[in-house]
Image 1 (cartoon, one colour):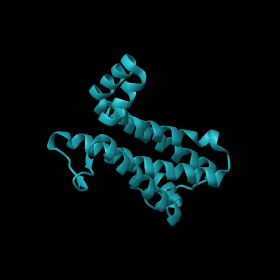
Image 2 (cartoon, one colour):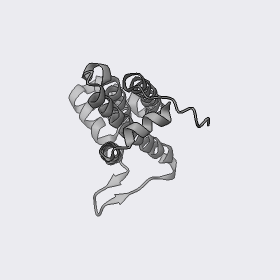
Image 3 (tube, one colour):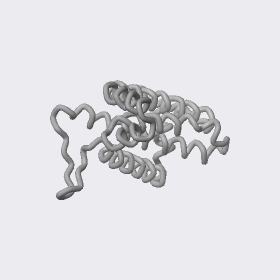
Image 4 (cartoon, one colour):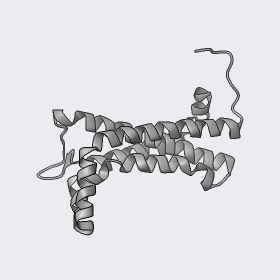
Length: 166
């Protein structure tokens, strides 16, 4: 089921390009927000060994988001059922991408400045649970993938390939 769905979506270079662009944009944005990219004194990507799990989770969230959003856009264009039914793909990816962003220093200071004690409490919570939140976000995006793939199979009438049983 998923092999045929993926083949149908990504046989068009347009959807591959959308997935790559979304991945690259989210990846760079999340790296900057998380403090892995430095601009002074020159452009530098630095991943300390104790934060390699954070980096890996950022890569996973960005890659899965690009994948699922491009599938959702394909579903939206092919089925013409409207944004309401395909919104789960976008919402899951937005939750996934935004999970760890609020705990970072620059965003955290803005939240604390704006919301005071409540903002400080929220920032402390997000900082302490950044890794579990990103793992939860990956789970949400994976569920979103399966829902989108199932919807594409039903709405686009993808036939099962019985010649290959893997």
